[in-house]
Length: 321
Image (cartoon, rainbow, N blue to C red; front, side, top):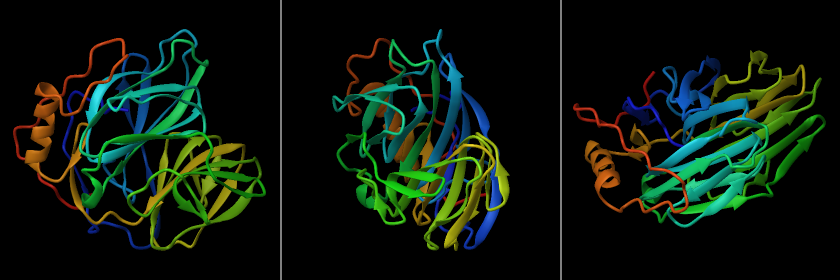
C-alpha cells in the first residue's frame, strides 16, 4: 500500500536514542488519511509520539468498510525501496500486482509479503467481484543496511503457524512468537502476530524482554496490561517485558508488533526508506524518469506521480518524540 499523502513529509526514524528500555503504557491515537476515493485509513505509525516499533516503521488500519456498492481499495502503481510491505486482512480480498510479475489475491489471515529491496513497484485493488466488507492492516518493515539492496521479491503464505491457549488463537505472520516461526522472510529479529481472543479470556502472553512491543487493536473490546484499547488505536509497551496480560470483554482481534530496537538511522519520505537526502531524491527522480522500479502490468489505470521533495535537505536522525 502506498502513502498517498500529496504533502509527503520527512520522517526521521531509527536509532536507539529514544527506545523506552522498560515497560510502559503509551496509547497512540491515529491520524486519518484518505486512500483513494473510497478508503480511509487510520495511521498509527509514524506517529507524533512514536516513529518505529522494532523494524516496524509504518502501520495503517482500515475498515471494516462496507464496499458492497463501492470499488473498494484502488491503489495505482507506485514505487518502494528499502522496506517490506505486509498486507494483512480480517475481511475482504486485495489483488496484488508488482513489477516482478507477481499477481496474487490475498485473503483473510494470509500473508502477503513484498520485499522491495533496491526497487519495486506495485498496485493493490479490491477485485471487481469482492466481499461486502474490507478490513485489515498494511504495515512496513524497514530493511537493515546489509539487506536493503536485495533483489525485489514477493511471498504469499496461505498457511501460517499458530500459537494457541484457552480462548486464544495467535497467527504468527512474521518472525517468531513462543517458539512458532513464520515462513515469511525476515531480515531483523521481529514479531508480528494476529491475536484472536474469545470473550471472557484472560491470559498472559510470553514475550522477549529484549524486544520492544506495541499492540494494534483491530476489533472488539480488550484490555492490554489493564489498558482498554479501542479498534484503530495502538498501545506502545516499551521493552523489558517477559509476558503481556490480556483480557477480552468481547470477542476481540489484536495485532502484536515487536522486535529488537532498530539501531540504524533512517530517512523515510513518501514510499521510500533510505539513509541520505541524495538517495531519496534519486529514487524520486528515477520513478518519474527511468525504468528503475519496473512496470506493473495489467492494472487498469495510470500510475501515481511522486510529490515534490522538500527544498530543505533530508537528514537521517535517531528516534524522535
